[in-house]
Image 1 (tube, rainbow, N blue to C red):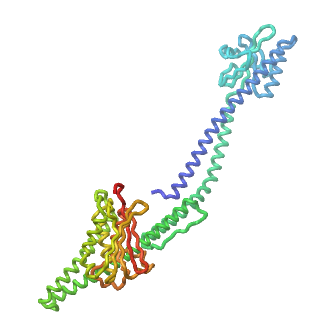
Image 2: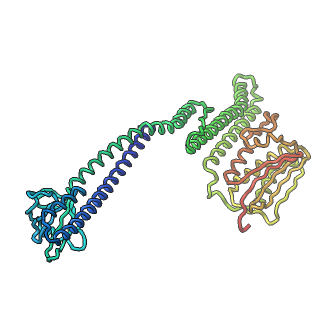
Image 3: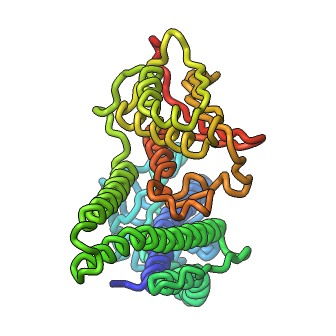
Length: 476
């Protein structure tokens, strides 16, 4: 597996190198085109100038071709272009070499080449072989007509090898430039990539420490780093904080479960040992067996509750379990099931339910459990002769608000955010409560959140009220 540092550095350097090569190649092509254009313009201008000179000299009496050669020689030394003048048959009659014994004099140029010349302007022909030169040359042609009606062809040329020579020099300069840029880029890229990899290495080291159980690990946020790296560092720290909280809750959950299981298991074990060793006489064993059976049922209820919570948290409420039903009917049926407890404590019941009903779309069994747990909790903490209240109202957001309230002791403000936690009991004296596990309200919250709804609790002036929302059917 490639290391991030080496991989990123190699990729960056390769990108720089490829970019330089592409730019260099494009520059070479552009340079070649410009060079050819400049030479074409130069030799064409030389051909036009030589044509004007030829026309002038041959029209003056007494002017010899030697004088024409001398004038062409001056022009050639000034421009660097070789120039010859041919008669109508293509034979060279004057040359810019300026010598009587010039090897170009008397040479015959290809007729097809000369036919490309015109009287109006010079014509450029690239890479053409000319007699007497033995190489390809960049050629400019121009036709001249003397006063006597004779035609003359002026051929100005320069060796095509000059282009190759100039391109070679440009390539050498480009190679040196690429080497210089790469030599400068390597340490610069190394420093930049190393700086970018530093916070990532810190996060990697912190992740390893977290994997070994050190949940208090955090990474530093450096203002000199890029915004993306700072966002990554902040996200890592938030994740570490969330994991630390999750681990703390897990430890608390295990401790609470262990504590809650310890009491019934101790009771069952003690009574069973008493019956086995004869401490409990046979005539009393049926009564203690009933106690053991009750403890086993309580353990079974605890396991079922925890399994239900786990299922709801993992799967939520599937759509096929959501049906249309009347909230008023559900609340009324649950309230009737508590008639015995309500009468036993002499509670006064106040209801505020809509006459037209309140149809909603949800899991009726889950909502029934929510209402049952809330009423059971309210009856349990409502003092004798107290008041139990039930209500269903419509909110501005087009939902139903179901409320269950009871009179009694006010829950302290610092306890309100904790009432929905697992195994939390606001009344610490209820540790001996044989019916409560501290899971009822946690199950209520889990069910409501699985329906994507909200639940609230308030407690002031001796009245505690739990309220949760349910969707309202559009035709209800």
